[in-house]
Image (cartoon, rainbow, N blue to C red; front, side, top):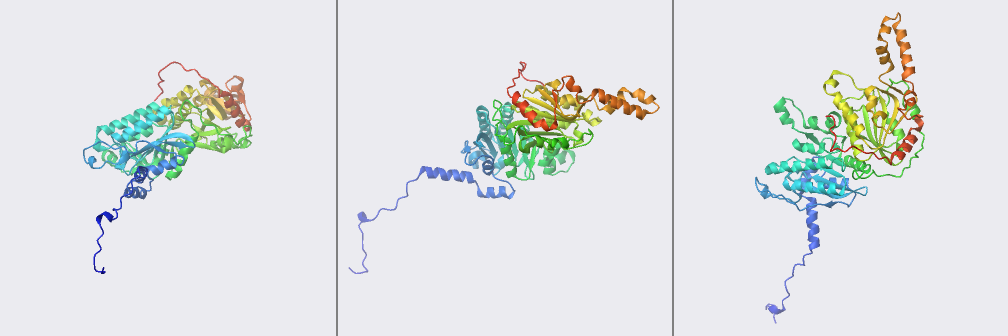
Length: 534
């Protein structure tokens, strides 16, 4: 056979064409889920370009590694109008599910700004509703990671109804499970009410804003020019409006503190907060307290130094640190047990109670009471802030909120009067007369209707005016009033305080007192609910 001749291979002897390997459903599913997780790379780049993490990156930072179980990742919207029928991405713009934080179950949902700008539609809302119902039924905290453009306009009233369902569930879960809102993007209009209904609001500077009406509407209606951050940025809400409890420079630090806060909270209102084995001795003397608080009632000091000396390892988590700084609210541990502290702050406005401080402390007291966190009140208060503005803006009803909160609280309550406690503010700061279980005072304390100078000027006004030497008479009467009615043992002699204690023993006294009160049981009157002052 020549090399030019064709060699014909019979058809029956030809090798069969290569067949595609059989599809592995498990591999297909893994690839599909990875693609779902990665999302549109261009949208991801745009999100990162704004200095923001994606929804899934945020969930990964919040939860313990590898614990997230996603709920309804394949959910899609059913809307067909205004172009939505051409784009039906999975998740519908919200990542929802559960995982653990420090080994304890936490539910979380995160708006995905890469999909419809995180705007809420019917399917999106239904996922959140389902998650919220599960969190309430299981009895576990709920964290929302908010980064959305509000209601999805193309879906009309069904989007608005979705928000209504969220608000109703926020309210029903209030005082049942801890609810935390983390603002990581814009939040405008009615959407802002969901975070306002939760227990704590975290914000991140430069990327998160909250407002009912945006800068354009404000300018159109009032003529005021204002930027998004000036109107509703993190620092505005943390220091001025009081809407936000915490403000951070970056998302990682923010979410790390959310984890820390959750480590101090019970899963629900039927449990006690988690106990951590203490390394700090319960009977450790607080020697520094003898010098931290000046004897002169008019000299300022930072009460946070007192708090740090008392609590385990000097570690406390202050709530609302930039708002109403004349009162300090903080969560800390005593002998490993979580305690809520409310303290007057003499370093700011002499520690007086005003409208903002009263509301701040009242909300904190109510939260602690709802979740079985004992309360310790560190008192050094000259009274309520006087002034026309305070009176006209309702100091009476706002101050009554703190009074109502303390009177209504059934958790263990211990008062420590560090230096002075005057007038109605003494009563409001959890005095024995409104239900404190125990009240202790430091030597040198002054408890009275008002300071000795003011009292003498009222009681002996005529005598002082008629005297040949008014200054001498005034000074003598001031000392008499202080000696008779304001000496450190006056209240203790009448059973209005339980003991005068050495400041160095404050920690050990509190530890022993709260250990005894841990078995406290309080019977409440039968009622649907109270009607607190507004």
